Each structure stands twice: as structure tokens, then as C-alpha cells.
Length: 89
Image (cartoon, rainbow, N blue to C red; front, side, top):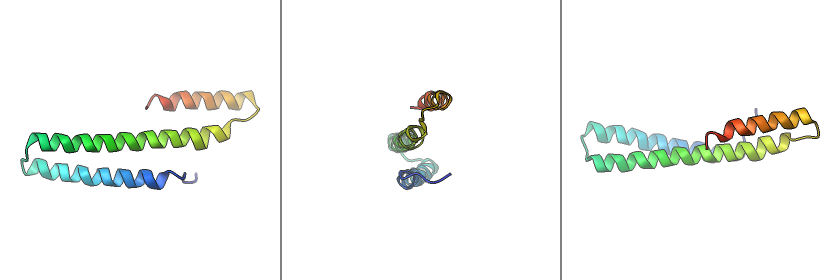
């Protein structure tokens, strides 16, 4: 399977979130203020959700739209896959 055009940007987001997460562990170990930790956790959560949405939209745009063909069976499979993946939005 080939890499989609959005994958490098998604990888970059996830690596950044991974770095933030590591710093949160350090903050906990250093017994930093809970408010500071929660703010950083919110940033990581937001980054992961953003990456997830970008991946789903990429999948819809590049995979599902290109798969639709004149065959009814193919359309049904595409529709089922679309329905399955959108539950993660």
C-alpha cells in the first residue's frame, strides 16, 4: 500500500504529540502543578484527534472516492467501509 499525500504531515503531528507526551511524564515525575499537566494533556489529545481526523479524511478522499466504480458490489463495499471508518470521527 502506498503512502498518501497527507501521511508525512500526520506523522509530523504524531511525533510532536509523542514529544509532548514524554514531557508530560517528566512533569508528573517532577510533581509539577496539575493545571500545567492537564493543559499539556489537552494539547496532546487535540493533536491526536487532529491527526485522526486528517487520516480519516485522507482515506475518504484518496481511497474511497477512487474506488467507486460502476459495479454495484464495489459501491456497496465502499459504502460499508465508509460507514465503518466514520464511527471514529
